[in-house]
Length: 169
Image 1: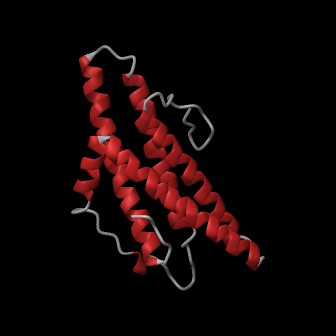
Image 2: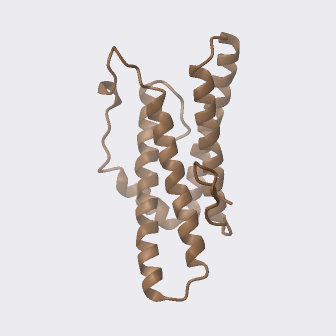
């Protein structure tokens, strides 16, 4: 069962691709939690442990993303399409007065989580639908959400590589 940020149930992940999306959501929650701990602790040895674990969670996210693209042809199509039109440069996103680096990746990952949850919910709605117009509207929106996932995933990979965080892709 997918949950929103506020813990409200969304759809039921009853197909493989949505179970993979649920796994991606789990990784996002873990990554953001470890980032919070890393940036709010003064215990260097514990921070180093959290960085190691967080980096593994980032790698897991990338691995699940690859699986999702393998089993969802539309997701793969969106992945290929976004390569040409998403251009982000994080080097100019910070001022000397306010270092908001922790907020940017956590915000992007929270956005990814929302896109994944939307796909799970909308595909769940379609699983019991019998009307063509409902199918067409939901399907178009699902494809938009898949594109948003790819755009945001590209952004977080770009962010991580800009700041020396190893990613799987």
